[in-house]
Image (tube, rainbow, N blue to C red; front, side, top):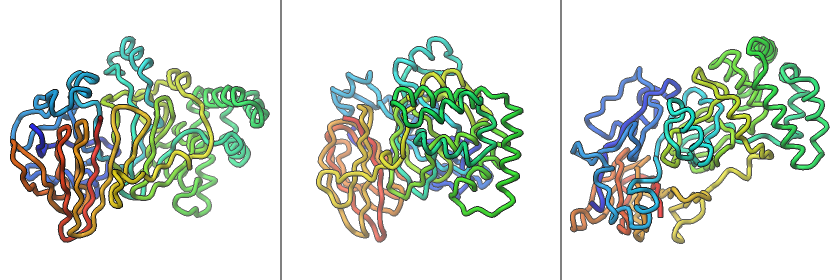
Amino acid sequence: MTFSRIAVKTQPYEWGRFGLNSKAGQLAAADPSVVIDAKTPYAELWMGTHPNAPSLLWGSSTPLKAALTEANLSPAVSARFAGDLPFLFKVLSIEKALSIQAHPDKKLAESLFARFPTVYKDSNHKPEMTVALTDFEALIGFRALVEINANLLKYPEFAAVIDETVRAHFAASVNSSEVEQKKALKALFKSLMERDAGIVASQIRTLVTRLSSSAHAVGTTEELLVRLDSQFPGDVGIFCALLLNYVKLAPGEAIFLAANEPHAYISGDCVECMAASDNVVRSGLTPKFKDVNTLVEMLTYNNGPAESQILKGDPYQNSLTSFLYDPPIEEFSIVRTTLPASASESFKGVEGPSILIVTSGNGTIVAPQDGVVKTHDAGLGFVFFVGANVEITLTAGSEEFTAYRAYCV
């Protein structure tokens, strides 16, 4: 198999957008066997071979994984990743904030899986990249220490849940060495995470009551704090919004989330790609298990403005219409192609496997299938597996056409 449309599956997590308000739901509706329910949250659309929602070859019950060969993966990818896709490709549609979390590196993932296999269900790491499809909000990485210190002064309720000695040491560390800054930040985060939940909830009630007495523009820190409390009343993760960078992405902008870095998605639709793992260490904005000790110890405590983490993509193969998001890992890269109406673009074969999804418009893909070059319909929500070294041509229909392609070489 060199090229095939694939059938993909959705996940109805409670934080997702409902029905056709969800981009994941809209794209899933490309499958005529899928009936979109207005009362169901369509949080994620999964594309790949992960056992929790494996893709199938279109029109059959054959799992995509069963059709993978050394030839369509490439000998190099097949050997490195045990004959499987090394990435999981997704579309996320977020109505309600996801948990404050981080993903373990490979060494920690192996340790967590060995010790707690019912919680951490595989031994792989999970670096991930997100590209916004709509306006998108997230918390990523720790703010600069001077900014955190300013928030401690601006929001007395935040300061009240931090141990006084820890807070004083943190304030004194703002202009110290990087090593001392990270130690002070770790102590501050640990103090917050270990504070009695009743005290935290009481201070959040005071904070939100105070902030709610005035109107705040959408997208300000004050509005975000009130909004998060409406979703997770009294949760310690609300204070994390004063520790982590709050970023707003425009469509086409991306963030890369390395191992052991804190983050949370707040709202919007995106494509996301990650190493094939489901390992998450949580600490707030969630009713799920919070592994506070592990999270406190695993984080890098890197800190500073988030602007350098926002990626806009680089031209792909000297193209004017395709842009590459290339994280510093071996499992995946992403290409975004946006074609004007009736325009075409041809691509040389990628040296490894890829999965492509049409996220707006309609068009066609010219690609070989069963030894014959064919023209395939490529409508909104159509998803394709493209084997290694397969050349393809994308052509837009009567309107702008956008496709995202995740690949490994």
